[in-house]
Image 1 (cartoon, rainbow, N blue to C red):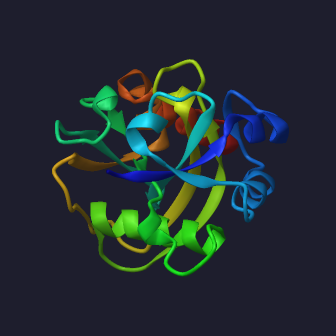
Image 2: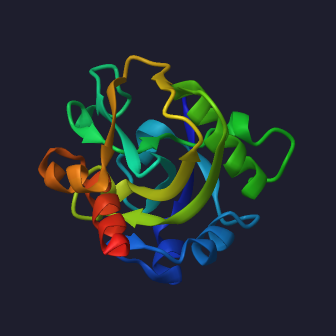
Length: 200
């Protein structure tokens, strides 16, 4: 049985719940990854429990003015998003990421790197930074998840899929993504809208 990292909805509300994109990620993350602020829950229960939010790293990949996008294949773990186009590689944080550490920031970032290595083969080097949080309580999926947006800046466009759930990898400019917004899953729409507003 898979266990996933969650925080309580009460903590999220206490920190300041929002709809859409929240650029003040450090304040939220510091509080949510503090000792005692999070715990692991069985995934099937977490998927149906709106009193908790699963913390989901959502990584977007940028190279030379373009962003990586892909289509979710039928083997995707989240059946409610299959066939949508996405610019974010997301995943759960699991107990394996904790090792001997507290459930803190080291564990969280270990989980991000593990997820990326599982799902993509990235040539060249990269830097990453957290640029914001995503919340979408308007959808069934969104109501039980909270996205942490990681911006990966790649030295090369050499990126390949490492699993069947990630298909048809392509790089698009922000203008192209904005034009195809309706084909994107909700979290990707929220990211594109934010990046578009920053660019303008």
